[in-house]
Length: 108
Image 1: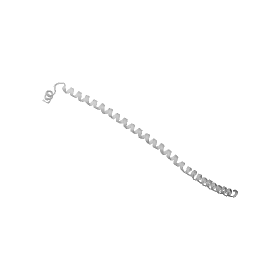
Image 2: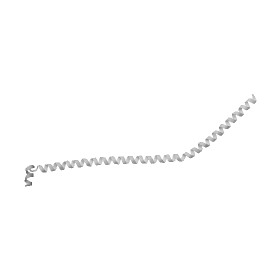
Image 3: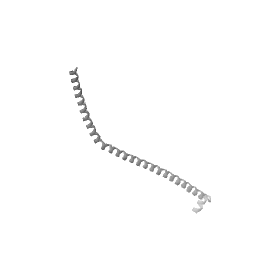
Image 4: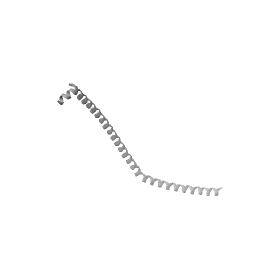
């Protein structure tokens, strides 16, 4: 009797059309979701690649900073030595000017 009621509610063949439509819609949705999944995976990979590039650049910059930091003591030592030489030259210049001034006053 249940079969008779289903047949009365759905004309012959109509149930098959509805099932086909449902499966067709599900298949379309599965394909659309698959495409969205692929797009999302591609975006994630792009972000991962970008992060790796940033990390590599950071490592490169850290290496450069380390190299510069290693040079700093040597350059600072050179600066100190040059300042000492400059002070000596300045003192000699002042002494020479004084001697020149003394000699100029004597010969005038």
